[in-house]
Image (cartoon, rainbow, N blue to C red; front, side, top):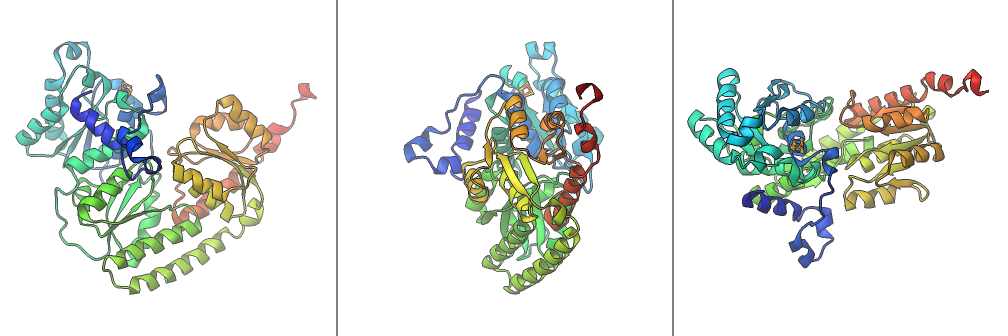
Length: 461
Ligand code: SF4
């Protein structure tokens, strides 16, 4: 690892905004997070994968992976981050490093690839991702990007997060660092208003941002930049002119939110768009922060009026489902902010959350979970599939909400299952999303197939 990257990794691990670091003494904090990587830990996503996840939702730029083709194949398009415009972000670009490049170096090949992309696609910027192989052979992507940017007069952004430096979460933050170092603050918006905000850590999965944006539009709040869901390069470049920010996922991009507050005086809060009351709370906090930053106070009244109307509308639409979901037992296996925000949303409609996963949750997330759940509920930290299967059986849950990887456990346990993670096909954010979530849970729970599969086979009787 280059000395510069080592310093950057240490800086990210030392992030003062991170809850784990806040609980440490000054001495411990200086030491940083020294937890050694376990071989094979990249199975849940390596640092390169994390950086790509964080930045790929930028829709109009070319994402060029400098490495063997498998790295790109691994990370390409495995999330349903939607775009309202350009679809260039969904084209997989890679330098496809081979044996000869490993011997002679891949820098020239990288330069030629950047040139080819500019000639064929002319994107507003190119993001170049470092990977294990090219980092180990010593390719200096920063120098190549700098030379290419000067030659072609276009931003070429190095994203130095080779897989071996750490896990996906570290990669998310290193991706954020690339934005802070090379993109944010490099352009100016045509105009600014007292109602300009950034949303940080929202990826527009299945179009969730589009369930929020109409509400902001109605209030006259301008979304200057979403980092990085459905974002355009120039929006991120001028996002430093926002008056306030909301951070959606605490673990992924805390460094962006904190450093933007430090550098550009943009205050932020952490909120959730899942569930009726959390959605209302987030709208209140956005308006409150904007008013504190100088927006007219009447925004608060308009926000309250909108919340009242939307809450009533959402509950009216959920009316037919809530009695059917009352006291149904849910096991929730997800990560990060969803581990508590979805718990709140499910409890709101009367469901009983019998367990939630805390593996990818921060200390603060875990505290929130503890406060919300009953004493006999399980907090699942790190479980083998066998243990999880037993938990499914023992907790006598009625439905499991999780990611695609654990769906077969639920099916084996003959239990209804709903995809809640990044591969999901439905958007669950905001009031609109809550109605959709309730509808999908109901559909899965009352699907007649469960009765069928639970009947013993003739040879078992
Ligand atoms: S960057 Fe490294 S760990 Fe990540 S996919 Fe490529 S080779 Fe594997």
